[in-house]
Length: 465
Image 1 (spheres, rainbow, N blue to C red):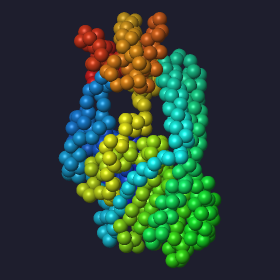
Image 2: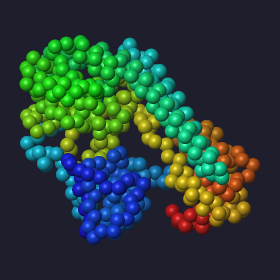
Image 3: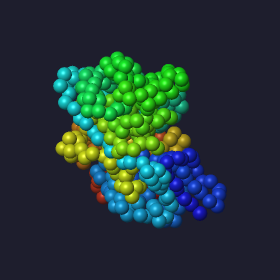
Image 4: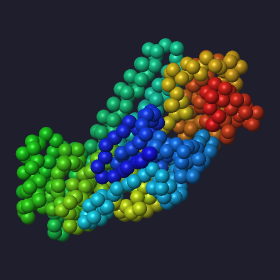
């Protein structure tokens, strides 16, 4: 017997998107609060593990429920389709999903609203933030490509050095982006204070969440004795006093909390209005913070407003996260725990694609696998793979800057072009290149060349897809 239970209180099993290790047991129960983090494809490893008979083929699952298509850039399973049917099949086979509204039947609704405010006066810091983001993304993409290429090096030190450089580069990029986002948050402070002030003047209490200490302290200073707050480093006694004052003192109109320090473990049901002044990288942290008001004891419908400046990185993050949340809720829930206010479609630009992690065609192959597959390649195989890479690179004139069906896509462009520039390929390099060539062969190679690559792929990897 197998079952997946999702809902309010959960614990974790060693299940991840990369797959599961078989556990010898008559009964298998997977407990998770987030069976889908971003898109329907992410639930397949769990349901296949639990019920490999009804959920046997990822390819069939992706075609039916992920709007999967064979594109010029390979098999794309990032979409969503037939979600009502997916929910019915999940419930009929392996899923029991317990919603907060089912467990806590008396709890009112929660509504989430995105407020995009004009960036007047903050144009320069927003432009600097986006420029910093583009530069960081470019550097990380280069380091990722070098790391993938290092898998083909016979020297293990090269691989370890590339991995160290990637980790160091990611840490530096994160620090740089944190500074840029902080500057935007500070520039946004006047409009946030105006909004909070207007809401308080209308009556009632309000909960304001932020990330940076400077924002917390500035808001606390502006509202003075009307506000209490919790920030990182506060003692348990100080936290308790702040919560009790907000909950019981009618003179306290505002609670100012750090998302991380005040986002869990406290009850703030004296207010039904939450304002997220800053966004966290992890959406679950913001949802937890919202739910400080959406708890037992809350009598009113809860409104959570996410405030972003037009054109800022947060504005693109928020729109992406909200769109994904709608898909997840439609796939899993009969009714939604939170209702998202509609966002105008023309306000969602193609820039949301920058939040999709670039996945190289070589990503799933580690050094050991590359070594084993290299041993199975003949000299003729290496030449065929090299020629295919060179042909694709010759078509990749813009280095994947536009979706035109020519050459490689995104990170693959760096790896494929680098391999194609070699005079000859070593078996290891050819094994790495084979994974890129296989991804694009169906749409960019001739029928004969494509058939040759397919034959090499099957013989070397033992896979037919």
